[in-house]
Image (tube, one colour):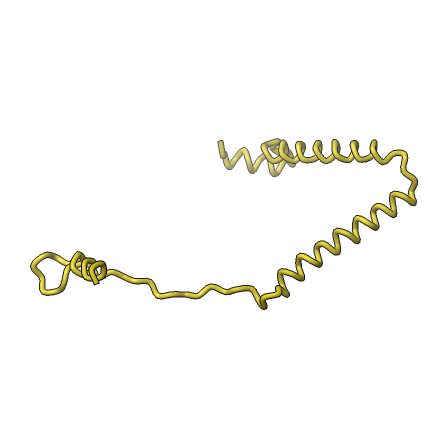
Length: 115
């Protein structure tokens, strides 16, 4: 599958392996071509002035929308974005061997639950 000698020979020869990336690339290009052909058919009767006007309006509207969303994200009405607070976690006592002098974990848990 990954024979180094074959791969090195292909690189030196300049041949490219048509793999999955080429198929994905071709599928994306075909979709783009289909969308472009559709839009060209729909706007075929438009004058150049109308096309430029629509393009300028589209740029102005989307630009304002992007500025509005970005501005709200940075300058929210409630001040800067909320930050999270780091809290200390409760760490249980280590589990000890029965009969030792230290308390058992079960004892510490029962004390926490019953108190």
